[in-house]
Length: 348
Image (cartoon, one colour):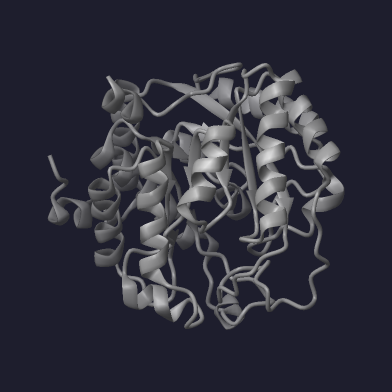
């Protein structure tokens, strides 16, 4: 049944420590019932910060001339996938700035096939590589990728336009989400929470958008201003606590409304609070994306200010993460793809 917008607004308007805790507890109960308390890990490779887009909020936007651009080589990326396999992470996420040139498309195809071969098909592959043509999505799907994350950032067309240059199209992004679905991928999207001009009504509509699109997974995060973007002026009035609370409320509301989808607790939450990611799990998330990118590249992939773990190796982080997850009373789905229950239900 389609979620009730009035109820969504009420959930997202929750205030006060006790009421917020009650909201998170309710979301956690729904999580336990529909997806269980196993956390699925996706080793994240930030493959390149070269981007053709110039979004007003993003640290790797093409207009940021202070940034040193990089692209990880095929051999380095394969080595990182091998590390992911050795650490028993069931899946990998390949993320990068948006590009549509043929050289890049073929490089990604080769890399997907290489990861499949290396892991003998054991590693699940999620792509987060932006807007592409149908044949490109098909090519990557046939090469072995099976999940795709393309964040809409906001389902409010006017708000979307205020955050992007005129040559960025809301309609094209929405069409790409439909193409991804058409290819057979598990479809992921998400929004930024706390954008300038965004209302509770917008966020409630975002959840209805997720429902209507019938998404399988969500990757959402609080908006955090970056000093080298047109929205840097918002840094002065930015409240980390408010951003964190709104991010957690959105996770909880999505879990209550959408029940059996996969929801990531993103690194942006940890940027706002040292235990932000764990708080996301307690509010209803069930996926984490530990960064396995070589530390020498991480400084170049800061979409927002204050990104954590820039100098922390993948192995160091894994030990800490294990302790934190077990302390919550949850388990880790090592060597498991952790596919969306929602997607599995649609297939059966």
